[in-house]
Structure formats: C-alpha cells, structure tokens
Length: 456
Ligand SMILES: *Cc1c(COP(=O)(O)O)cnc(C)c1O
Image (cartoon, rainbow, N blue to C red; front, side, top):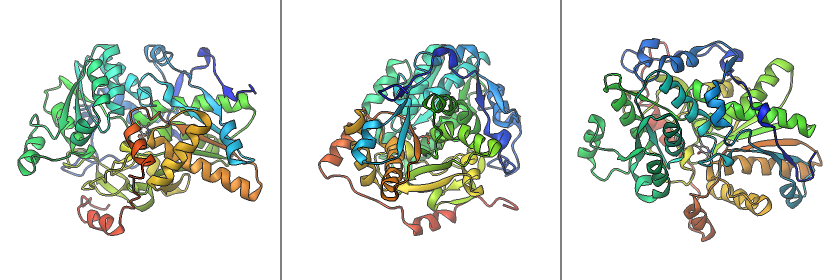
C-alpha cells in the first residue's frame, strides 16, 4: 500500500468492457410498457428516442459489452479515477474500520455523469444523429452531456428545471460554454410546457416536467433529434460500471475486499456503476459483501415508495416501468441534493432491492451535511450533497465498528464534488437548513394516480 493510501491504476488498466447486470439478474427483467397501450414496447418505439445501438444495449443478455475505443480515448482524460483510503477520516472517527472511497469527482465536470454522457454522444454520432435533447435538474447531467456533445460535434437542447435555472446559474454557464442551448422548463417550446405555463406561469418546474419536454421535442422532430437520459435506464447503469470495475482492481492492489459497499441513489446510476461489479462477485463467486443504497429521507423512493408500475415522467408520455416509485405526480421538496429528487428508481436497482441483494436506507438532510463537513475536514474534498448521503452511511458503519470493536472494510462511491453547491453549505453552516421527512400520506395519495396496468 502507498503511505498516502491512494490506489492509482495505470491507463492500460482502464476497463475494455462494461458489465451488464441484466446477464446475472436473479429475477427475470420486467418489460418496458408503452404509456398509451400499456403493452410491452418494441425496439421500434424506443428507436424514436434512442439510436438502435443504445436500444439494443438496453435489452442485450451479453455480460460484457465492449467499450468503443473513441470512448476509452475520452475516458483517459480523467480515468482511471483514484481509489483512496480515508486514513485521516478513520483516525478522526477512532475506528478500526478501513474506509475506502472511489473518487469520481475528478472528472472534468466534477461527477460520474460523463461516463455515460460520452458513450451516449458517441453512439448517437455513429448513428448520424445531429442533435440531442435532455433535461437537467441542478445541471450536473446537463454539463456532462454538453461536454460530451462538444467532443463529438452534436447540437444539444437542455430543459433545465426553472427554479435551478434561476437560482443556480453557474452550471448553466458551463453548459453554454460547451455550446449547448439551455431553456428554463416549463418552456413555451413544447405543447406540454405551454399547457403548464397557461395553468401556472411561475411554475418552478420539476425533473419529471423537464423530461416530458425533452422527450416531446425528440419524439416530434421527425427523427432529426434524439433524446438522452442521464440515469435510470439499463444502458446508463451499464456505462457507469467502469467505476466498480476499476474499484475491484484497486481493492486488489490494496490487498483487501470490501465487507460493505455504499452508494447514494437518485436515479440509481452512480450506485449501480460502483456496486454492480461487486454484486456480480456476490452472485457468482459467493462473496458476501453488503450492498447499501442511500437516499434522502425527503425523497425516499426505495425506503417508502412502492415497487410497482409507473410512468418515467410527469406528463405520462414516457414508458411505464416496474420500479420503486413515489408516484409520477411527486412534487419534490426543496432539498439541496438536487440529483436525488427523482420520483422513481432504476428498474435494475429496484429489482435487486426487492429481491434482497441490495439494502436501502435513508438519511436526513442535516446529518448528511454533518457527514459532508466531517469528511471535508479530514480528507480535504468538499463532496456533492448527493455523495454526502453515501458518506453518512459509511461513517455510521465505521462508528458501529468502533462500538463493536470489529474491523470492517467499507467502500463508498464519491460521486462528485460540491463546488457548485456552496450556497447549500453556507445555509447549513448558518443554521438555515431543515430536516424534512416525506410523509406517508403523500405517498398513499400519489399511489392513486398510478397507471392501471392490466395484470400488474
Ligand atoms: C446526478 C448525481 C447523483 C444522482 O444520480 P444517480 O443516477 O443516482 O447517480 C449523485 N451524485 C452526483 C454527484 C450527481 O451529479
């Protein structure tokens, strides 16, 4: 082990293939249903939104999918990313536990999101797509896709949640720097947006609304524009597995293997990217690593939502999938982990939680920021509020080790840095943040609006 506890891989060890969890899923995958007919969709339906190469990745049974060389070439700008042992945090906690974190904050835009953005831009370019549409909340995904589109010479239209567009302009400037067009959603550019604006001209917007707008523009473009999603879908999760595949090699370098693997979960992509290769070992090599997904108590999709059929978006235009959901009518509270406010969860992650391969827990906002500040003071990195949920869980496990005197190896994914979230930190330090637990009655109410899937 290096004294500093940093485990760095040579460029030559950048993975050559992604891992496809579908190949080893212990339960049969649920079909994707058409939002109108509620019948399983055909590849033709999906190919209105995505190039065929991506549609096929969504359904392929292949366990390993080759990463195209042009994608690997761009990955090499920041990959392989470091895996670090948080020695100073361990000391501060006086824990016998060993804590490791995979540092995805070193990507150019500061999160794991370019791992799939680059791949999706590449496949679209190959398929002759001229322009992409997408949505973004606080701007993490938008900035990643904007960078990727600029690399491949694709135009990009981004529907950014109105409240973030107004309150968090810096990521918008990053997107615009890369040449993307950014609109405050709801916009007057879509039928759905115009309908919403007529009802409430000052709508703060939501991720579900922005998805509906981006999907509408692509679906009505006559094939010239395709749509790109930054989380939830199988191909997105698969692209993110470079994280966990590198981490496996790095744990080997460290001469340890994790007892607990932790990631924060919004749509599920960074969690899956880090955890799926470890779940693969659990399922095929008899490893017994505990796999933990952490979400905000204010958006408790896995811990309070129902595992059932729901629309992927607010307008009920996106396909229906089986997932943990708070209901597509969910209105997110104004918490500061913007990337964790989606009403649903990746169907693959949901299936693994339902089957017992993944544990889910939630964390309150204040304890999450406590953990973020403790981590930053020990390790020097200011984490994204989203990532801080994983840190909270890692610290809790390490404290448990101290109390029980057991040495465990804990590994978590640091999905991004928090340099554009400093107003949230400022609010926290000045006592202006509050805890909020999403109420059960709101979940119950939303369940009455679920699609009535025959036999579902
Ligand atoms: C977007 C984002 C998340 C949440 O999205 P997932 O798909 O659940 O990974 C988490 N952390 C960071 C830093 C993000 O930007």
